[in-house]
Length: 403
Image (cartoon, rainbow, N blue to C red):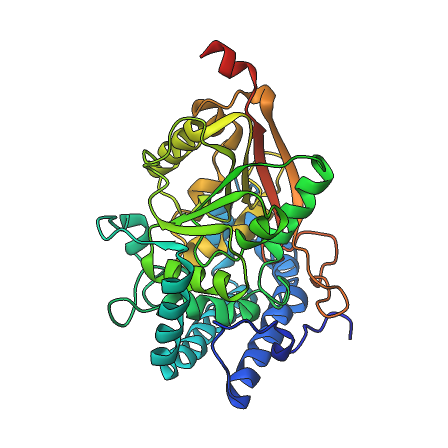
């Protein structure tokens, strides 16, 4: 079958990747195929259940169709098909976290020692113990990962970064490629087509986690200085060691908050980037990060945010409901509110004029001979395929003259 995901052994091995036993890899194989099945064949049953049972029952009871996605959610949560699908989705994420966690803990001493060796020799890691973890990262275990992105088993370890990396393949059904970097590769492909001769000098990636989306930028622009920031030291330790193990030398992982980029002067970066990060932010943090991104972006520079598409009047309410699943079932508390924002207005409020903004679709880039496309081919599958929208803007050059 062409829609079967590749085996876990198709992952590209890098020096920091935790090793898996036969049985551990087999569990990930099951979860990878299971997630593909849930997103494809089983997931499509949700719309059928809605159209055949839930919507007619709602209209019969209320004399009208649902007014918003929350009414659909309340009604669908009573439907046996959706309840079963939802429970399976949640359990698949918990099983993925349990498998990845025990893999990492089994070899944590070795992983920590290896990370320390890479980071001490590379000089590509800058930690700041004064950086506080924002509450929107500590309030829940995001994605059901124990400790979220910032926690750990002991001081100085790489637990959460290693767990994130070792299991991302299963979570995405293999759609991000051999290094789980299909998102970063998609960004590179887009910019090479958009401006093939552009050579940014400095690139900032905000909310980098383990750098799987930032490293492809460093590889594509080897003469650029790439700064990847996050508040989570455990993820940064692993990410910096991972990059060093891959031989990427022009990227530095810095513990810093996107809400305060004061260590960098105005106009320092030619490119400011986030990838699937905005939905992790609170309503207070979002405008602060946007404003800081605008300040440190040089005139003529690019701001580029990879995200799921925002909810709008053009998006069917059922699709909004399906995309909202993570907010209520996958420990993504800010997902629903963020995707209901008018991102053009949010960016305009930060200083990016609407006539400088653009929205473009991007899709993960992976080896098609090994990694087949998502079950729905070129269409969206309600946020479960590696298909995203990008909200971007080019900062006008004339702003420098005005200043």
